[in-house]
Length: 236
Image 1: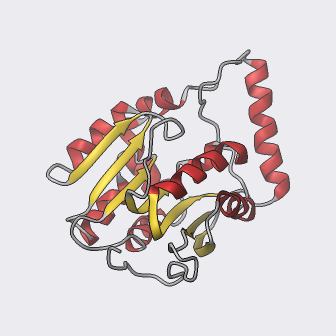
Image 2: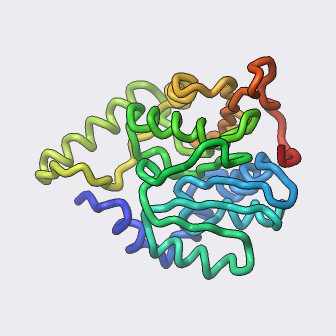
């Protein structure tokens, strides 16, 4: 049966980190790789969408222990685990849906999301990505590491299966239920570009997981944030 998103993760909290690191191809590499794409320097402000227990943040604080991170997640249980794991760091944790939590305007030097956004439609993501673009400072980037569908056919099948399950279980509310509905990497890039990101690049792949950089143009529009390549950059 389908489970509401926050309840799904709360029930699996005890073994969550081990599952993510041991069961997903490339996880031991893609968490630190993702962290290395984020800016370095004291006071860098980073937004983490779906931060969970903070596996990517553990890696990021090793690279930049002086960063200031705002993390949003639906599960208070997972945020509690994150607080316990990373005491002493500059963490502002918000329990809620990143579709609803205000993100502000030009507040962040980078944004990141790891293995969280593959549960939502292109339409839902478009509105979120427009708000995310506004929340980033000019010239800054969103780093997305996530699970993507192999093909258009697989993408359609995932959404059809979810619709059939909701109908069978009589679910008609607007709550989020846990079921994987990944877009293809190509369709994800199309949504990011439609939201206004100027430069969308797949940086690396691990099986079905990719790291994507989506950059916001500088104020003049004459330059784009640096693309490609591994390694943290100074905080703008």
